[in-house]
Length: 449
Ligand SMILES: [Zn+2]
Image 1 (tube, helix red, strand yellow):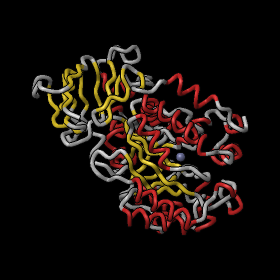
Image 2 (cartoon, rainbow, N blue to C red):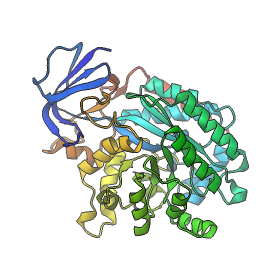
Image 3 (cartoon, protein in one colour):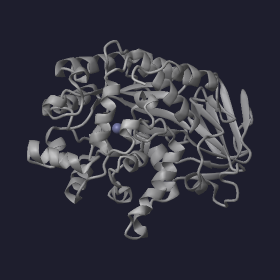
């Protein structure tokens, strides 16, 4: 791959341990990994490729830690527009019952195109519906075409509607089949090496759609295979009622007793945790993915993220699926997180600062995914980085362009690199014709349209 020298950035936000922001920063990349960062003219000027990023803010590539890409063709679905979680699901399942490997592939393509343009360089996809014939290899191949790092959550549900869950029987799987399928995906696709593009995590959907047996076995499998464990927890108050009724305990306590809360675990949402729950999560060392747009859209509540961070719980950021966001845009999610933290705040100690949220979307996201090779611009890390022109109308006029990234309404980055390869250039996908892609993935009408 050779060497790449990035020069002259207006500010290079490293997210390293000292959180250095280097004015007129530069960075040397060799074979996809960062060799050095410093001020411009401090590194050797010899490189195979030199990129001048004068006027640009450079950050680590954004990391999305909760998505359901299969929902990308379900935006603003009429039956679920004005519903909270349970009714929202009820409105969508008749549609999801008709999902095929082809419709899922098209949705994944659309969702990835959008999220890559927003500066995302690593995405964790919680895929909990596995219609007959859906192959993980197809999903990894689509991600490879965009050049993005792809973490596939082998999601699962074994509690159907008849047992108090949400899914129709056709979308519920047998426990043994789920576990064997997950182990198989890990064996075939999980690459734990530095700079990995393909990883697999174990992802039962939630306590309301997976039995205690499946939750426990999933945690054991993740531990045995040394991969991450992920599921929805604390999204709605309804889950608390469910757990009290079915287990006689709060959801966090149930998850803990099933062995599901470990340092390899990260949870989606975390809106409804009481002080005892938070103490357990902190003790267990698991992290949380904050999905502010989805929580607002479904009226789920406001996750007290500042409080979690103050308790030394790692919090990352996720867009959640497009049936409940309805965008796959991490830049939007950053701004929403900053603003939402202030809506229910009793005082300004609850506010999330711009830099705290940028850290959630980069460095913290890497931690949730169990990686120390991404999320920072530091020697040894993979060269995943984004550049935004500080002269753009959306952020022009700020003396603090780094904070402006989070406070102002940005939707696209100017440039993005993964492993030293450019995947977005001048706000466009590299090697992908977006107009053709949209026409192709959206033209074939869905069966129940
Ligand atoms: Zn979700």
